[in-house]
Image (cartoon, rainbow, N blue to C red; front, side):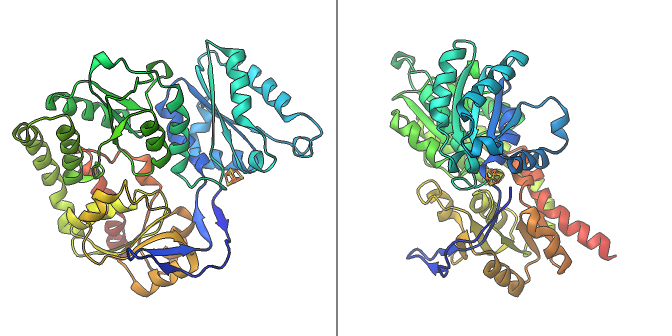
Length: 428
Ligand code: SF4
């Protein structure tokens, strides 16, 4: 569900690096939402939420029409007798899993996804996953992670899911030499484009996490270099580093410039010559810039306010400021991973107001006072702000739409131009 969490009344403070820290009521999704895009990416995986009717409703509304297409996710609803300890929740879970796997032999990887209720009654899903893995091996592997609103915010659900995969990744053979692992769920079309560019740069040992099928889990080891495709993967990166992989520091592949810097950072790590990188990337970047030119004409100088939602706000803000010429009023993020965002922060315009966490009423006051041309926010805030005469862009679309890479730079800009254009049309 969307969380309206009233935390202790700690006032907003400015940290030494000038970032405004906010602690208060939040308007964000819980990590269960990640299932909506993850189940499409890993085609033989199933996500079984162990939760309440609220969790089932959340997934149903977030997935929309997809629920009619024999989806690969469901909720094992904990009834009152589970919560009251009248039945053994583990027995119930085993029964449901056995039924599910008998009915759906296409499932090769099953995620038990923890929720607020399963955490509150301390149902040990990691033990359940181990037990069920042994029972259904070798045909099905069972893993677990938490997508609860107590522990995770929106895209952190993907981080928790990918981190749960790291321990089962095979060990790479050292003799096979250095390899690149791109981490973060990308649309297949984007993944294919990146693979082609890596190969033309001379990096041909490249794999993606998550893979499209559980049988294609990438092997990792001391020779693996990790390139994050998304900024919200703190736990996954840590788990990979613990297995000896090394992270390549880079901005994220949003926009022509961001994508070029991201690819160039990988090329540098693999010793590809600067001249070859420039020769390969320059025409692609020039094409992205041409696609962006018309949106720049519409959007340059417009003032944008970003509410915290998915952690991609900072890379987005960098793209909007540098490639489209928008003016940043405030850039909110639910969590700021300073190390992973270091290359992005350097590229932001001087003096921009960054805020971490949320105290939604205060943030709304700042937004109303600033009267930005465009507000990027969640669905819960969008219509009320529209009713107040502000133009909004739903942030969730930025997660569900392929926006990474050179080819998608124009589409990304269009997502911001569209609401403003619509506003102009309605005003005529
Ligand atoms: S996991 Fe928690 S926040 Fe998410 S839908 Fe279930 S009860 Fe709500």
